[in-house]
Image (tube, rainbow, N blue to C red):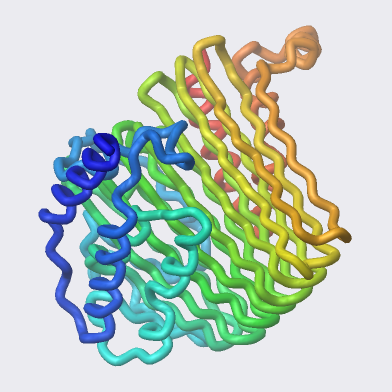
Length: 426
C-alpha cells in the first residue's frame, strides 16, 4: 500500500503542474481523456514490469535536469530531397522550415489545427489502444501536454519525404510533441527525423497505414550527451501494407523508445530496427517493442544492435504476440550487444506469446566482446587497431542498418557512425 501511495503522490504532483494547451474542442477532449488515463494508471516507477531495467524518474519529475548543448555539426539527411519542418525547443520555426506543401500529402501543424475530421478521429486513438495489455502512461501524458506537432495526411504517392528536425537552444527546455500520420489505401510516404529536441524531450507518433500503403521512417536522435528522451510510436497496419522504421541513437543520458505495432490486415509487413552506440556510465538506452499479429500471412522483424563501452547500459524489451487465427505468421526478433569493455551492461527481455499453430517465430539475444580472431586478422594485414575496431563495429551494426531501404540514407548514417567511432576509440 505504501508503494502504491508513493506512486500516486508522485503522479498527483506531476499532474498538478500540467496546464493543457489551448485548442479546438475535439483536441481539448482528446487531451482531457489522455490526462484521465495518466491519472488512472499512475506514472511509471522502477518497480513496474516494463521499467525494471530503466529508472523513469528523470522523465516523470516536475523539475527538468538541464543538459549541455552539443557542438554544432553537419546535419543528418542534408542531401535528402525532403520538405524541412524545424522545431526549436519545441516551437515551430517557420523561417528555417520549408513551405509544407507537396503533391500527395497535406500537412497541418497541431498548434494550428481546427476542424480536421480525419485527425479528430485518429489523434489519441492508437495511443489509447496501445495501453493494453501494457500500460504506457508517459505516452498518454504526451498526448495530453504536447503543444505542437504535425498532422500529415498522405493521399497518394508523396512527391517528397518530410524531414522533421528538432533543434536545441535552451539548455533546460522541456518539450512534448505529437505527430499523427494517416496513409490512405495505396499511398507511399517517407518521414525523416533528426535532432535531440530538448533537455527533456517527449514525442508521440500515431501512424495509420491503410491497405496497400507503404510507410518508411528513418530517425537519428541527437548527439547531445545530457539529453533525456522518451518517444512512442503507435501504428496500425492494414492488409498488404508495409511499415518500416529505423532509429539511430548516439549519446544521451537516458533514451527510451517505445514502438507498438498492431497488424490488423492480412499479408502485411512490419519492420522496426535500431542501432545505438554509447560511451560512459551516464549513458542508458532502452528499446521496448510490442508487436501484435492479428491477421493471416504477415511478417514482422525486430533487429536491434547496441555498442556499449565505459559503463554504458543498453536495454531491449521486445514481444511478439500472435493472436488466435493469425496463421502463417513470420515473426523474427534479434537483439545483440557488442560490449567493448567489462564495465558495460546489456539487459534483454525477449518474449513470444503465440495462440496460433501454423507460425514461424523466433527470437535471439546475445552479448559479447569484439571478435579477437577477426581483429587479429585485420591487424596482421597492416590495418591500424583503431581502424580495425571501427570496421568490426560497423560490421556488427550492419544488419540493423540494412533495414533502411534507401541506400543513400543508410550511407549517411553509416558515415556518421564511423566518424563517431573513430573519435571515441581509445
